Amino acid sequence: MRILLVENNANLSKDISAYLNERSFQVDVAENLEDGEYYISIRNYDLILISLELSDGNGLSLIPYAKTKHPSIVSIMLANKASSEQEIKAFKEGVDDFIAKPFDLGVLVARIEARLRFWGSSIIEIEDLVINPDEEKIIYKGKEIEVKGKPFEVLTHLARHRDQIVSKEQLLDAIWEEPELVTPNVIEVAINQIRQKMDKPLGISTVETVRRRGYRFCYPKSGAEN
Image (cartoon, rainbow, N blue to C red; front, side, top):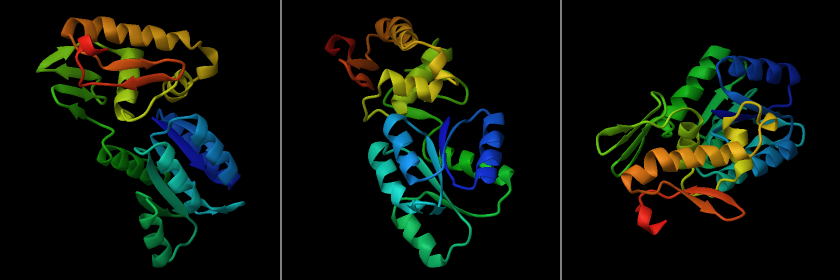
């Protein structure tokens, strides 16, 4: 899971990112609204943790932009001290959860995991296709399909963002811990494995190539239509 943390308290930001990284989350850190907007424009995120109080404005102003770029993104607001009016406004703007500082990092992780489960980050069901990220399983018409590792993660990420075209760079950033150390060719290899192990044997199409832009999850669609 890739998380964007937007927090201008350097010590708190360091503690949160280290704690989340230890628990297998991939965390990018931005110190202000401008940097947060930049990260959102270039990468896909499953969740955004954003402070209400930032050096260049109210963190709440970033939520509509994040939701526009990534409709399925989960958002959690962090606030030093908030009134009920502020909380109500935050939820109306699209915030999914609200946590008051100071907070226990273990509780924060529990809230993150709960929100991701609630938002549909666990089992994905589309007609006869079931993708279970927690167990790394793909079931099609009751039969398990052997797609594992990075190809499974690529397929899952595309399925979660099935209304979007996802570029190679965005897939690398979302799935590989150190994307700068691998080449975009690994995406082509993963897509090819999905097609060889799943699409062709089953006569379906799950991933389509959008020329010069990236890939898009396209199931349900027959292989003949691809």
